[in-house]
Length: 126
Image 1: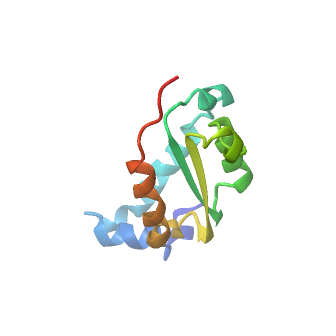
Image 2: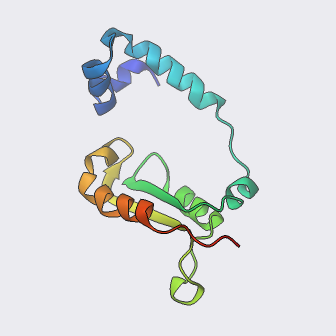
């Protein structure tokens, strides 16, 4: 992928709007690409060891594939029959008609779930 492919995207438009040096988008892109390549996958055991409440949010047309989000959700204790087992500490939201970029334009959906998640009491520790 090349920086020019992002020209006209919401990310590029926002960068050129607020950056002190709008012409440096290619530099930002190169740094972000290098950072992405350096990220190591976390082992399933590491994710499963997370006990803090976790809210996973993706779009149905996201870069993050739904099956990957569901896998993470299950590793975090989700995917159980909550009426019988109780609700898990993790929650999964798949926003309809939403991409990785356009999720920020879904304020109405996000505002309906994020404050409720953040304001919920912490679960009792085991």
